[in-house]
Each structure stands twice: as C-alpha cells, then as structure tokens.
Image (cartoon, rainbow, N blue to C red):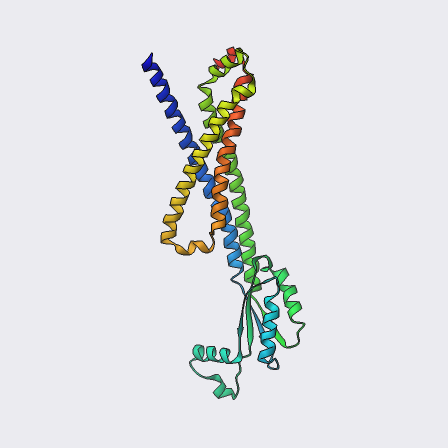
Length: 292
C-alpha cells in the first residue's frame, strides 16, 4: 500500500514538473515575440530620430539672432536634438573636408551658418516635415530647409510593414500558446477526472471542486512565469555582454513590461485553462469519463 502511494506521489510530482516546464517553454516563446515587437517599435523611433533636417541661415542673420532662433526651436514639441553651426565652424569643417581654405580663393567665407536638428519619432514623417518647414520658412532670414524626404518615406513604409508582420505573428503565437497551455493543463486535470466526479457525487459544489485546481494552476503559472523570465533574463544578459549597444533600443521599461506580461500571462492563462477543463469534467456523466 505504501509503495502504491509512493508511486502515485512520484507520478504526480513528475507530472507537475512536466506541466511547469512545458508551460515555461511556451511562455519563453511568447516573451521573445513581445521583446521583438517592443524592440521593433523602439528601433523605429530610434531610426526616425536619426534623420537630420538642415536649416540654412542667411548672411544677414547675426549670431545673436541665430542663438535666439535656436532657443525658440528647442521649446518646440517636435525637436529632439539641435545643433547650431556658425559660419566659422562651417568654414573649419570645409577646410578639413577640402584640405584647403576656400575663403582664400573666394575672398570671403562661402559657407552659411546653419542649424541641424532631429525630430521626435512622432513627427518624423513627410506630412509633419512639410508643415514644420513651411512654418520655419516664414522667417525671411532662413534661406533653405533640406531633409531626406524620399528616405523618410521609404523607411516609414518598411517599418509599417515590419510592425504589421510582427503583430500578426504575436497574435498567432498567442493563439498557439493558449492551445498548448490548455492541452497541458487539461492533461494534468484529466488524471483526476474520477476524483472530480466522486466529489460531485457526495454533494460538493462546483466552486468547491474547482478551487483546488485553480489554486494549483495559479502556482503552476507563477513558477512557469518565473522560470521563463529567468531564462529570458539570462539570454538577454549574455547577448548584452556581446552587444552593449542593444540598450539603445531595448530599455528597462521594455524589459519590465515584458517580464510582467509573461508572468501575468502565465498565471491568467493557466488559471483560465484550469477553469475550462474542470468545468468540462464536471458536466460529464460517469459513463462519459471512461470514453475519453
């Protein structure tokens, strides 16, 4: 009798470990997709902020006026970074690029002062740039505004396609994850289907019968979520050791959201699957339990 109980206990423990590992593996895949989606969004914003808009200033604009213009621009909601390049600095850069002083041939400094700025990601598109340029060109001392319009349009189109594909992939994986975890949890409850029927025969309420299974599934989802987060954290740390620049697109906010999402999804999905599975066996009659 003791040996039989020990075998049953060992089988139950092995089943719990199998359920936990299976659920954790699915959660790891889900976490990877979430990281990919969030990273793609951050990469999109990062790439958009690398576009440089160059604003050439007229020779009649003094340096003090140019600095006042820069201070005014920095207060605008669409400016991410701004750099003022004076005529002297532009001439110095021209000397280094040409290997000669062009002012010796022309007789004056041929390079105009300019302001280079990058936009926040929400404004880094052709429509926003057009009205920003139109607004800035109302100043008669601004001679020209240039930006890579074709490149911006092409990058935005490509990023939209990538985001759509990733969202579809995330949706599909969510459905697959639910199916896999549901089957895994159902297998664990299947072994106790006769115990569920016995408790129902002695008059136990459905909520009383469900609660131990739901409580067990909550712990299972919690442990599986912690395992998945640990594996993801170790993998990201090893990747960070080889590519430290990854933190430019993968910040702590993204990591926190992903970790919490994996943990919550593990708990909620196992709890919901357990609720569905127990209800299924509660609705079955005694004869139906032998046919499945």
